[in-house]
Length: 316
Image 1 (tube, rainbow, N blue to C red):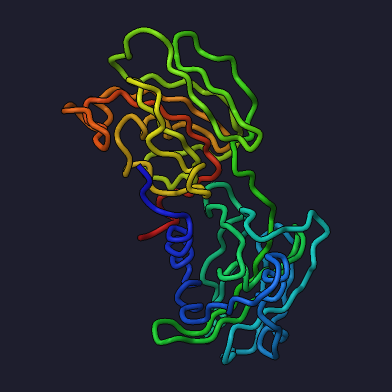
Image 2 (image 1 turned 180 degrees about the vertical axis):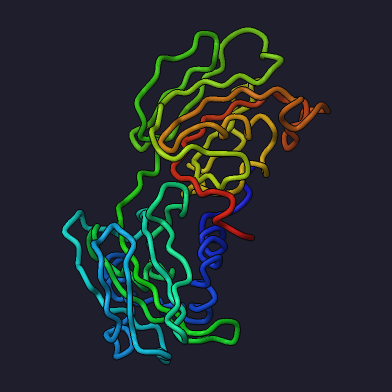
């Protein structure tokens, strides 16, 4: 069931704004020491190019930047405009962020993204990512200006980026009453679910129950959804796949999942936790059941929806 790690999607999403193209080949080194120190050390240094950018507007809102053109740094340069006064962020946390991008050769704006729900997925903060290079360590509310050098595939660019917050790795919505006759779910301290199958025959149609009701962006057909999930077989209750075991959420368009799983995502809001029972007709079809094959199986998932990105925002 696992299709794609978050890192791959983040690169695809950001490349829609040319950020990945600008940073191509500019990965930060992996310094030694603790994870926190790595994140601090990963932050790119300021320089004359990034220092020259004048920015107006409040953190958390789209910025306006002006600078003399062309701007042509030899390496990525990052100037901190506001250190932020929110909670400190740590390596491995998922962050929400937003940015305004400019053409470094002409000064023309390219795009503003992330300030409205559904525009950017949360991203894991790490020393070896672009987000790690531009934000480093610090606090929620941090604003930086980043000047990216030209590459073979893109010209120089300037970004103003805001670190908006951290994102939980388990659904944070309001608990709902369980639905009689459906599997029961118990959550570990970290949010990982265990699923108990009820007695009786499996349903013949897909059944969906909302275990936690979120209030974030509503996932639509084709959108990317950042999720955690655990899947078990109705026949014996055994887990066949779980992102909780893999250590990180995944993200992929809703249309890339089996029909029953797609139904469980679409129309749900970020922050929700969903229980879905999927018969073979909307799962993996009919066939022989064996250790590796899910054909013929009724399958049960608990899905935590952590983020969403409108289909038009991300590209493969």
